[in-house]
Amino acid sequence: MIFIFSLVGLAAVFTCLATFMHDFPLFATDPTANVIKTSLFLGSSIGGITFSGSLIAYGKLQGILSSTPLLLPGRHTINLGLLAGNLASMAYFFYDPSMFGGLASLSSATAFSAALGLSLTSSIGGNCFMYTYKYFCYYWDIGQETIMALYFNN
Image 1 (tube, rainbow, N blue to C red):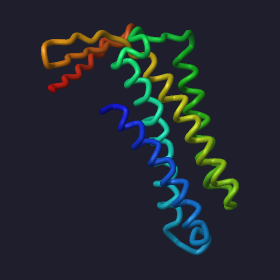
Image 2 (image 1 turned 90 degrees about the vertical axis):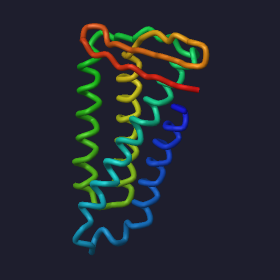
Image 3 (image 1 turned 90 degrees about the horizontal axis):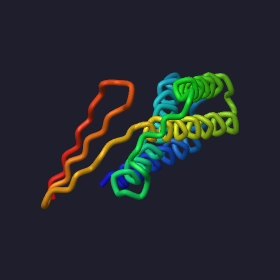
Image 4 (image 1 turned 45 degrees about the vertical axis):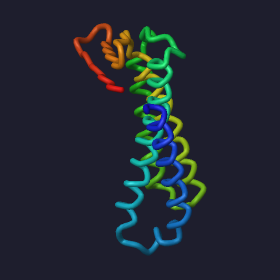
């Protein structure tokens, strides 16, 4: 089920890129162009995080990847750098009115967001226990007191 969410994230990215290319001629004359461009940028960013984060979550829940958290030294600095790159992409997206600049901004925002999704999801760890027809998974972040419980009923 989680694998399907990654496909939804990828579909959101491609939909935003296609909508930008299709509606590009209207951006010069449409007074609501900034609202449309904002939604396209947010869709690409959220889609990138959803795509990569869901793939890591799927791999951990299926046992393909190790469920131990990947705690990189300086991971918070890395995440802030990826967020700053995303914000810089957004600023350039609104600054450059060309199609190439817009596609480059959306693509770089997607790449920064996908890397952020990998970084954020990889640092989550936990254990999965299987009961007769039910799965109960719990995850915690080392160093914080956050607990997330997932319960699947077959």
